Length: 165
Image 1 (tube, helix red, strand yellow):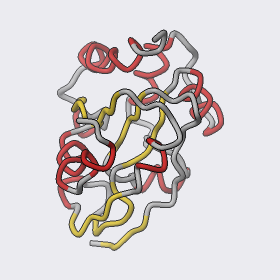
Image 2 (cartoon, one colour):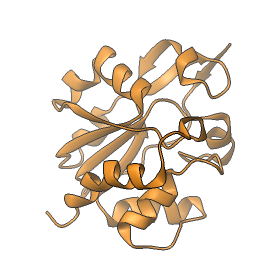
Image 3 (cartoon, one colour):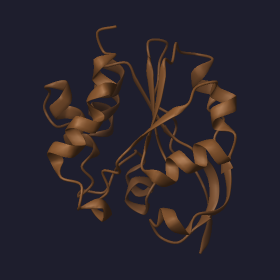
């Protein structure tokens, strides 16, 4: 168990309409300094397919994809005790200041990528801070291999339904 502090800045701008939240960055994400950095995580494959765009490779390409489609991206947890990349091991979590995003952008919906992110969003007071309930999405983590790509695409599609709003 390690006590870690979140070091990846949020992705958002004044045009962001949806907020997508993970729980806490994995070791691979922390190493690459961007969310969903494990090569087997399907997050970027799902987003790029739904957006009809090429798979982003660099952090700048990932950031640009999000911003072009009104997506703000961050994590629920600012610091915690965690073992490796195991969400289930998260203890002593403190929330990120999500109002940094919700005060700067017209966020209309919040999505949490996985059960733990959704549970922490509610338990740590983020729902009250943001004034919006969160929709729970299935995790794109390789640990959630039972969830197939077509299921992920269907679950994540509502993020892009707001794209033209």
